[in-house]
Length: 250
Image (cartoon, rainbow, N blue to C red):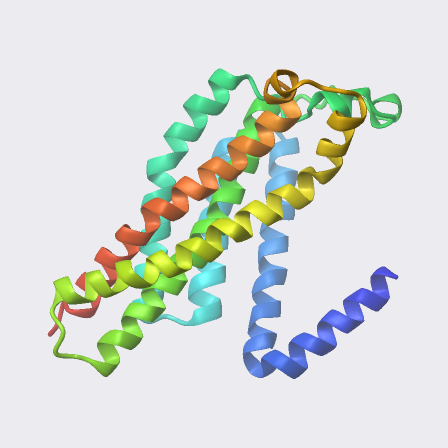
């Protein structure tokens, strides 16, 4: 069944995407390779957070520069994503560290998984969980940054007489529309992953207080909150950087 799904995916991406579909597929393969190398580096003793940040830089370049080409709007998106990650990574480290998130929640520790595998892998699970949050944040802000910079580029290309301030306000106006769909996308993505968790908590009669204090809920909630905060920050930032870059030589 995995092979059938993969074939359907390949056919659709070639038919619908054409040349850009091939480029997107190659970029996806590149990102998967970066992730695999990062996992190998972590198991080899490299610090998980530093490894994730280095891998995030490569993913950012592959996804944006390679997939969308080297141009002003792509450069604006790359710069915006880099700044947001730098702003939030310290907050992620501090907050997730104080939460004592371990990466493996109580449900996973109680499942049959723990009967067959040892968790003594000599890797800080708290740092692994912080790395998971950073990767989720990276995926969320890249989409928003590209949407804003591309929209402002089109506005500038069709209305070159607009000032930098007018371009910025156009980006903010479009960002408000993007924000609504982005937040809903984040919500449904994480609620889809947490559906089994919610069923488990309901089945075993967890109270609301018990659910809010469970590590399972805490990890999912932390991921979605940081991703949402990143999207909120990157809209004005990407609008400002895009407006400044597009009007730099005007």
